[in-house]
Image (cartoon, rainbow, N blue to C red; front, side, top):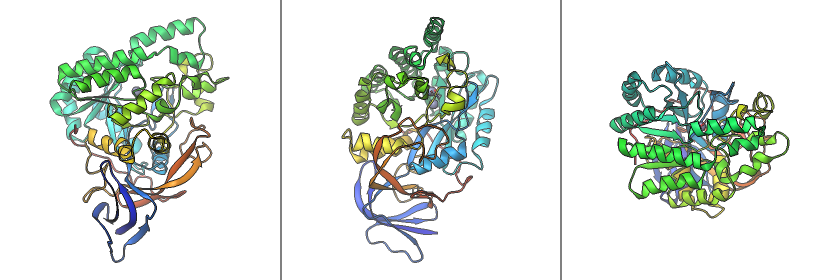
Length: 460
Ligand code: URP
Ligand code: ZN
Ligand code: ZN
């Protein structure tokens, strides 16, 4: 099957130029001016931008968490991702106590199989760092799982101790894997939460106060220090604060392979959202929490300067009615942590980051597609537009304007944290490995068409 995309402006992390792209089957076969191909389906991209399909390296579909399960599964979540211009995701397979990593992976593979409409990979979250797991980490890498997550928060459930953290980092350094860190000091958070609830401070706003930025900075700095001793790369997920960013920047300035992502919620929402009247603040309960507004500019400039490398989403949707309010109306610590965002990432980063003047269009592509692929071992198969790469392409209408609303989004969740936000730019056509899966408002993909992404060694 041949598809010819004509007259578009191709934008990669490094270049911007007008050219045609010939796609043969699932790969980019040729890039050039004035291309012709008999029998090809032609997509006229005049006036449009052609980006590599975006990559979201932090999603949670079908995640059991805090007494409930994220409202998107791999079908609804990846359809929403595709509508937003994302053509690959990396989700998290969580290892329960006593389980092998393979058991965790099998569980999450089964959730995705037959459902995902775009390609997917997994980080495995290590919850039980035994000797057997130490050995098994190498098997995971051989099987295309080249990154692991450790939670330094959620005491009593997902949290690991310092010994496990150090052991996992040391092993990752030996086998060419990346350790992803949820950087919050869970012991301190646990004490603050208990004190607040006991004092009757139970509204969603206190969720933010129970997890101050210093708690994030401490855990981030600790992981980075351990990574230095272990001679391993480290990647801080969902970084929210100037405090934590300073730790990452210091390490990077010293030449350490320390990396970090932030997410649109930390760039655009603030602690004020958690003060919204009634129980509305629960919509914004996530960990780490939303910060005071002034952190936002620090994060935007970190993305511009290169101190931060990636914008992911940490998409962890729970319905406001029926999930956020299930146990937590009288106790913020029982509100399921997380917010939706897999579909809205590009709208927000393009409109507020690129059009907002924080960085240029090449950096926009770098942040949402190229750096994720490089850091997580699947560049140049994905994350760029080059001959031989997968034909995961996003044809973007840079002039389309609309207002974000839960009513028109595809995420399976009953609210949008950015309701009423005006954005410019919209996917016109999305291709996944050469097949058109989104065209305007039409979904043309197929559940199960997404393939497991076997990833290679990390690139830095
Ligand atoms: O609040 C969040 N971030 N929920 C999802 C789990 C995690 O920590 O990534
Ligand atoms: Zn986390
Ligand atoms: Zn997460």
